[in-house]
View 1 (spheres, rainbow, N blue to C red):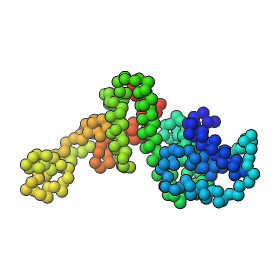
View 2 (tube, one colour):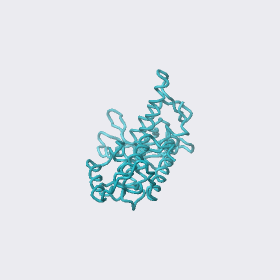
View 3 (cartoon, rainbow, N blue to C red):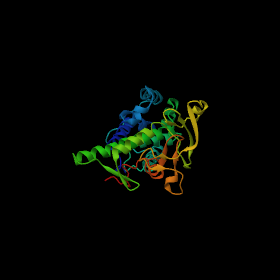
Length: 282
């Protein structure tokens, strides 16, 4: 059952079993899984508000009367809610194309079991499923990608940097990751659009170009050029985007930056592309 679990996820289960036994519970329930996650220092606990782990622990301690401890020799079963949490955790890992199941996936599983005590204890701290899913998706993608890079670099020692192919051309993986990371600094909404020429202005003295059309109000110093901006470039791979009927004419934009179709598919539609089983890193 736990073959795909990371070492941290396995420790979460171990700690959850320990917590249940300390409370004298006949089953491992969602609150015990939550305590198991809080015991394990992970990216999840670092994202919680300051003092949240201690406050949650205090609430659980106050809510349950401690009964006779369960012996370590007794096999404690999972409650039905806890079983669903583990199933949800596996689904979250599949959703991100992660071959492993980590403590972060189990945490998302707890949030999906909305009527559980664990989810209700987290709610006052502003812990929302979609919000944490996005955070874990982004941070998990970075950590997984960087882990793949560092482990492969150690094996290859001084070998050339790893290469990824985009539009049939080779790119250094660390360079690509840097651009992807920059684009993920904010939760941009990317929409698919056909590229069209844009108005721009030029500085009459220096000839420098700006897309800030309001500068044209200073007509003495700036000149408005209708449809003067003839092309953009993908912010990750520099693929040219211009008015065209082929792949050069369509991309994804957040209103400022552009992504080509291939980079969007690899790094946004499939956020764990670098370490996923379909990655083309060489």
